[in-house]
Image (cartoon, rainbow, N blue to C red):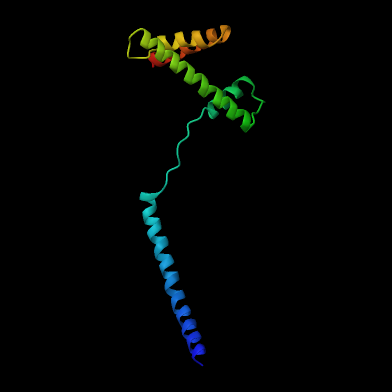
Amino acid sequence: MAPKAGEEQKATKSKAEKKPVVKKAEKKIKADTKGDSKKKKSKKNVETYKIYIYKVLKQVHPDTGISSKAMGIMNSFINDIFEKLAQEAARLSRYNKKPTITSREIQTAVRLILPGELAKHAVSEGTKAVTKFTSA
């Protein structure tokens, strides 16, 4: 008979415990919503050129799409070219014993790194962008 009494006590305890557990959960949810503004994990901002690649693609070929894999490859390509241009411009500024990388160093780096006709187009577009920026 003793085990039955123990079982009854467990059954009454489980019923009694269930109600406070629900209340505790409600309290935790309310506490979490208040603390979310402070403890909320922010997503790391990964900067890519994907939207710009897409805009240029639509300017050149409005009816053509691009796969996500190809977009990733193009993004890596642009990051690589950017890194090469920045290193070359930094090297040029060091050679000239200047602490600042100016548009002149960037232009020279473009001429050194990009081949032929691509360098000419890049220099003309860069010059156009700089004049637009300085005039505004």
